[in-house]
Length: 111
Image 1 (cartoon, rainbow, N blue to C red):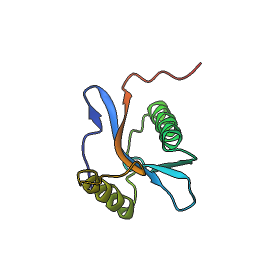
Image 2 (image 1 turned 180 degrees about the horizontal axis):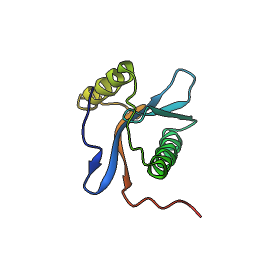
Image 3 (image 1 turned 90 degrees about the vertical axis):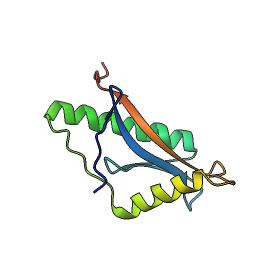
Image 4 (image 1 turned 120 degrees about the vertical axis):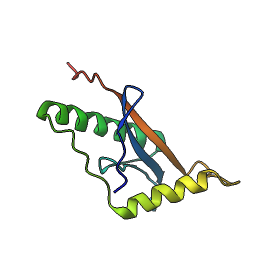
């Protein structure tokens, strides 16, 4: 389902979205790795998600297992709905974003 190469221009690239949740917080979701983060702002949620993606990739490289684990179909439906809305006149009004999180292929663990 929704398989595609995750390597794009020398970077590991995953599909993500972030949006305001019902509890006045923001949730960010990585669809290709089935990761999620929550925070008080969209930027903070995206930063937390990026950190999770980095941790996942470093662990996967250490273990030699780069297998993806796609999110449930319901999350993909949200992603594609937000992608379609992004192109409309009113857009996403700053309450949501569709983006790719890219990580250089040469990941070096933090000292």
